[in-house]
Image (cartoon, rainbow, N blue to C red; front, top):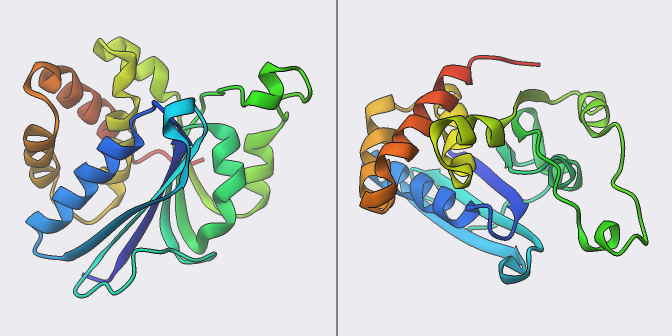
Length: 195
């Protein structure tokens, strides 16, 4: 396997840390060296959260620089726009179409930007866009957005589906396991779609 660099971006409370733990577990099951680092964010306050996951034969630094990410897993549209420049030209953006108002929008000192998906398309990156919140709702828990997005990523990454499912069983608390497996499978089914 070649090295794989994955950035997870979202808003505090969306489950980005669980997603990074799942990715780390998958990498270890494959026998790869893995580094995970939450570098930015105020996850306690609903602020922007960025996590780097690097895996490969030998990983020396957890940091991903601009233009180095193979995948950008964006839990929210504005966060995708903020961080898209970290993707490689041939990288893939896995995008949740959800909008979460940042503080300036909540306080009415700014408006939520329009046309984000069009701006993202203009960058030329491959986009796999999904309404992960709606899918998570259909699976039985809106908090499963993170695992829906992991399912989309899993379909694209060259790692066996069973390894992903085993990692979910090991990382997700038992009482949420069924809904998360449902969410993963729903995301996985969508994973082949490109926009």
